[in-house]
Amino acid sequence: MTVMSLAKYKQKRKFDKTPEPVGGKSKAKFSIFVVQKHDASRLHYDFRLEAGGVLKSWAVPKGPSMKTEDKRLAMMVEDHPYDYKDFEGMIPKGNYGAGTVMVWDFGNYLAPGAKSKIESEKMVKAGLRKGEIKLVLNGKKLRGGFVLVHTKGQADNAWLLIKEKDEFVSKADATKQDKSAKTKRSLGQIAKAEDKIWHSNRKK
Image (cartoon, rainbow, N blue to C red):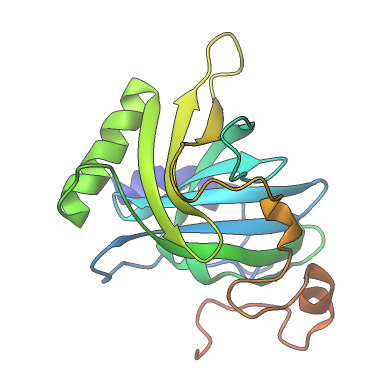
């Protein structure tokens, strides 16, 4: 299942030209999520959920919101490998998705009511088929209940990312928190850094 789900990801990339990771396997007790701010041809945020050994991924043009009234368009894209969760740096020019990538937020998640990682990921995969995925995020910037809803009458890969009402709701613009949750750097600092080319096999 994992090999097949990463086929499209691998087709789009030349791994002798891009430093992006090829694979990876989770050993964590809880399923992880990551949001990467990506300054490519257009600035957007990539929302990723661990499920079935890969990261299910959505491109969110306006970024996540902590306001319940905001319904953020989220376009589902190809699955990414687990090791992509740590990817912060540059995708070189001439490669798919060329530009600067920041780990804007990261943490773990559970599907509401799930009592284990296995049960939680099963519920996410069922939600993918149903067109509604409920989540409780425990991140540095995003916390509490969220729902991804597949839209009708738009593109097949069009979803909405919506904050659910709870104690973590905020009227503040979450995207104003524009530093990396991993390294505290801005996109500009990441682009200028000596370690801007990230390699999946380098020592951490």
